[in-house]
Image (cartoon, rainbow, N blue to C red; front, side, top):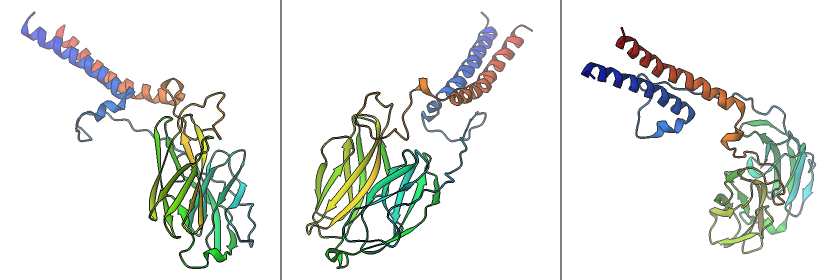
Length: 298
C-alpha cells in the first residue's frame, strides 16, 4: 500500500471516528467534562435544551387558623387548600416557619409563633422551585408570660424547606436556632417510623441534622428544640428519599416529588433530543469520510 493510500485510509477512519464520537457526545454529554476545556470551541457542535414551564398560577389558601385568633400555647395547626403535589411553604412575619406537600388538594402542618403579633401566609412551589402567588394572610396573636422577656423564646428556621438524598445515603439538613437560653435539646422525627433522633447543642446558630432513609418516599420531618428553661420551638419540613417507590412500602408518607428514574423509564422527549443531537454530529463525520472516498477513487 502506497504512502498516499495509507494517508487516505487514515483520514477515512478519522472521519468515521469523529462521527461516532459525535454520537457518543450526544448520548452521554458527560464526556465533555473530561480534561479542562474552554468553550465555545472552534468547530464544536453544542446542544442546549430547556423545558419551558410556567410557575404555579393558583395560590394556596389558609383556612385555619382564622384571622384575629389569640393563642396561649404552641405549636398551632395551619391548613388550607392548594394545587396537589406542590410544595407549600408557610411564612410568619416574613420568616420561613414550615413546609408540607399538598396532597389531595389540601395541606396541614404545625408551626410555632412569635410572641405578640403574627402575620402568616402560604406560598406554593413547583418541582423547579418556581413560586406561585401568595395566599391570603392571617393575623393571629400569641400571648404567653413564659416568653414575655425579649429573646426568651426559641425560634427555629432553615434555609431549606425541602431536602433530598438517595436511600442509604446520609441526609444533612442545616437548621438555625435563635433565642432562648442554651444548651438546647433537639428532637427530630423523620417520618419513616423510626424513633426520633436526639442531639444537643451548647450554642445557638446553625446546627446540622443527620438521617439515613432506607426506602424511597417523601416524608414529613418535625423538629422540636427545647432550651434550658423549657422554651420550645417547632419546625416542620419535607424530606425526599429519591427513587422508585416500593409497591408495599409502609414507611412512605407521600409520593416522591423528584423520583430518580432509570434510563429505561426516561420520558419519550429525551430520546427525541438525543436523536436530534446525534444526527448532525454523525453526518459531519460521515460527510468527511465520504469526501475522502471520493478523492481516493477519482
